[in-house]
Amino acid sequence: MPTHPLWRPFRVPDDEEIARFRLRPHVPAPVEVVAPDPRWPADFARVRARIAEALGPVARQIEHVGSTAVPGLWAKPVIDVLVAVADPDDEAAYVPAMEAVGFVLGGREPDAEQHRFFRGADPTSNVHVFPPGSREGERMRRFRDWLRTHADDRAAYAELKRELARQGFTDVMHYNNAKAGLIYDVYERIFTADPQAEHDPRPRGIRT
Image 1 (tube, rainbow, N blue to C red):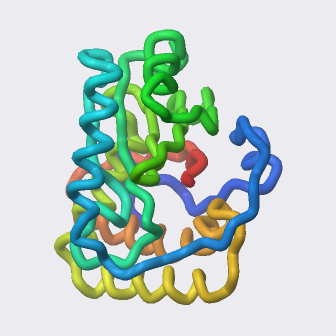
Image 2 (cartoon, rainbow, N blue to C red):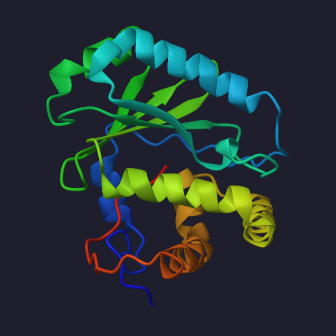
């Protein structure tokens, strides 16, 4: 097992944690996984422009993460976005502006690096807000970058997602929990390959 500032033990959130995270009732819907779409980078550009216009300098970082940021990877047709703001607990500094341009605050985890989650439409998007330099944000970036350059892991991840979609999940968080074993295997390879060394035992936050 690697020892690294970004490493954490294998763990998935249980239903009680998921319920605490959600700010709105869950509406069951089939989890869909689709072939890579060449429009995804342009979709991200649209989401990025909307967030940048809404937040201005409050947004320290706006970055495309998740599977739609990996060329050639099957994915849910949802654009994942990492946003950094100085203090996510200061919701007055950014939540009204995000809501004014159509994003809906759907989740809150103050104890998990101050994580806030927004849902957007046209295109469908998940926006994860963390403070600058968050461990979770860096893990998202490294996982994306690894899959961009490691075809075997990219193919295995795509096949797992297609298989899970065929199983009929109607809650994306349960679907994500089912992916966690493979994801953590990839994390182990990422952090073993990195020469830094310091163990981070803190648990994972919610991923949507």
